[in-house]
Length: 142
Image (cartoon, rainbow, N blue to C red; front, side, top):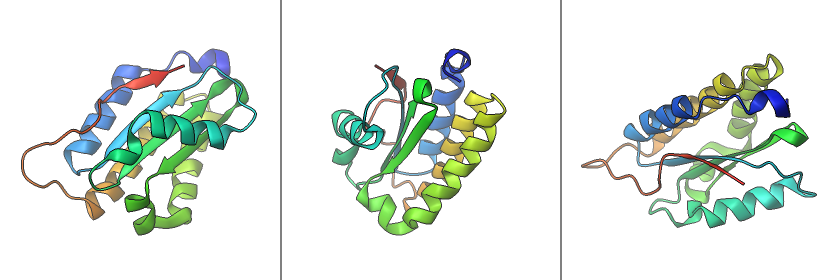
């Protein structure tokens, strides 16, 4: 997975983020780590904080954190969105992404996750007034 994962289409992922955010006040980020952290969840939480995901106005930031060398990922939602959708929603998104990842369709898996998260953000956090993008729409890496 790690070698093939480097071939994902970041432009398509960024376009999916922009589209999802156009329909809500939510903020979505994707981060790829080349590391193999001992505690993936703790590392994802730290990155969530560093990227400013917990400082959005409505606490509706979502981070998709991917560690290709470990063949694992985590999806973190801030308290605003998590309180509205709960653990089952995150499991559903992860399952949809995993289905694509197993076939080697990494970009499609990430885009599918973004689209699904975007639907829920739009339902619970519809846009209010002019577009307000609190965080950059880009794939970050370390």
